[in-house]
Image (cartoon, rainbow, N blue to C red):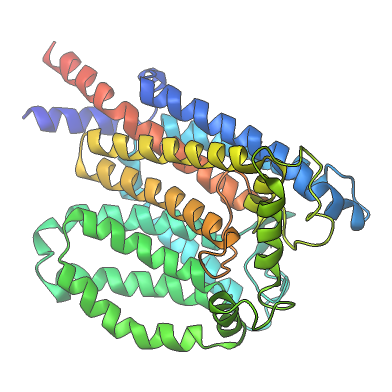
Length: 395
């Protein structure tokens, strides 16, 4: 009876003044996210100013565009933090469907008007003068959808046909167009996030092993495709192609090596002067290591550890399974992107092209990351909101 009253109250209050109540987790998330974004804007300006000028653009071009993306992200963060996270149950299928349609548009043959090819890949859609990367939205869509369906299928996890295969079918439908962009690492990340959320919901380990064995041949053929194979070879043996596939990582290591303990100083880095491609995006962690040194690297790692730790703390204290799965999935998304980006820069993982959340240039990633923080804040506020609702109902 009490649970029914609580659920009724939560559904009736999509937006509420009580949603602005701040606990220590909410304040900490706001604070650490703000610090990381500001640090990212400063680092991005230094890493991108030369590249912008070489294209006859103002030195603030990339950082100003990122700042506008921060404004949109702030709006998304506030909206998501004020919404009752239960609404994501109803939005799970619509968000997934819209994301899938956008992904299909990217891989349609001859569709260059809305999905132009950039650097040999079609990953962005241009709509009304704005650029959107659907694969960034897919990461969150798969977490929300998997969490929503996992809550409903709790009693069916023992069955492979009814409890597990429906998830695999949808995950595959999302992963295949992303892999065809091509962006295999993001496709694998989407699948991994779905598996992780379902595993935390209680799915059987044997089912994951079975599906992996089925998908292994596809992964093998994808990894043996042209540039991916060259990247793998250069990762295991940097001397194979030092001026080609291994060039970026080599320059990245030069950047870390020259940074020392305290770094060469803000705007004093040399790798951004045409030596390290994508210094403001795929390899911005290397720029942190060069200009801010080992201390800057430690600061960045600690910031992510705190934000991810807060996310899992919120998951542990969430008032229901949906909140737990959402918070854990979002925290895992931020953690995995940060870990993989840093590992690539340090030559601990093959080059992937994943952005460093809140820091790398890319407004789609920034917008989605800030929206994720908003969802975490909404989940953090939910236990207090539920208790107040129960007291009102009893009164």
